[in-house]
Image 1 (tube, rainbow, N blue to C red):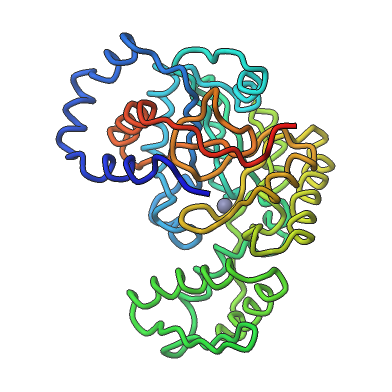
Image 2: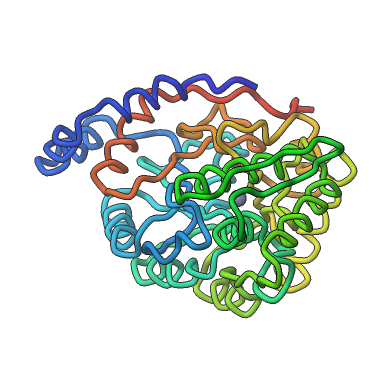
Amino acid sequence: MPQPSTNLLTRIRRDAAPAAKRLLFSVGAYDAVRRVRPSDGLAILRYHAICGPEGHAYADPGICVTPSSFERHVAYLASRYCVLPLPEAVAYLREGKSLPANAVAITFDDGYADNLSAARVLQRHGVSGTFYITAGCLSGEAPFWPSEVRQIVERVSGESIALNATGTHVSIPCASPAERRSAIRTVAKLLKSNTIPVREQLRDQLRAAAAAFAPTSYMLTWEHLREMQRLGMTIGSHTMTHPNLPSAGLEDARREIYDSRARLERELDAPVTMFSYPNGGAERYMTRDVARLVREAGFDAATTSWNGFAGAGSDPFALERVQVAERLEDLAFALEVERFAFKPAPRAVAQQ
Ligand SMILES: [Zn+2]
């Protein structure tokens, strides 16, 4: 399915001069725009890890926001926007009611342990967030493969990694730091584009290449999640093992979606109604069939990696999100630009 407004938004976000963004921010231009023309859409912010450079051991630097920037983001949002819990915002959309002006919902994908501090920051500012958890990969359970790949590729001895996926041999160079960074992307792409059984074979080969290395888990625990619930946070599902759902095939996709909901509800003793499709970006990570499975599993809504505001025309099972930026000036700029470029993504699930 195409991403209608992504190219334009990417261009605007990339080409706008940082100095111009800082100036607009410092003179209060965005506050003035919102006063004259409040947003009637919903900005669902898409965070992942909240960490400093130490977090690059387990998360791609591109999805990390430092704790000090995050604190600034939350203070800004809480004082200027109407920050809603995502289930509440989704209820407006599903019932066809107008959203409060300048509505924002805050979400986090994956379930990194650093999200516990983020939840405390949200609570301190009187707002709530939704945390999408990879339910089979919490600390003490199966390793979360995107983090495991980062750690293993850094420790492989030798100048290349040899992998064999369904009869195709690949040799991935990893002699220099630049090659290792590239190898992490290549291996991740390989794992995403195969079925879950092949992904597991590839992981075994990868582990063999870094003999005797046991990756550290940087994920939350069930006890952390219960604490986050007590702080007023919403816990959602991000599958069991973070597969690329279309690559997994319908049966395994169904198991990943259904099992994650059942496990989360059992452990947390609360309904789990929000879902987020893993592996966004340029990958094909959801289809109509996958969205239908999510709906049939009993979820009320699902968020994607399509850039943009969600709104009255959005499909609740293909909700657009706003990619966050490290600097508040960039995030504030995105929040004011993207809403004017809003076009709903194509509906993933036919309304019946
Ligand atoms: Zn994810």
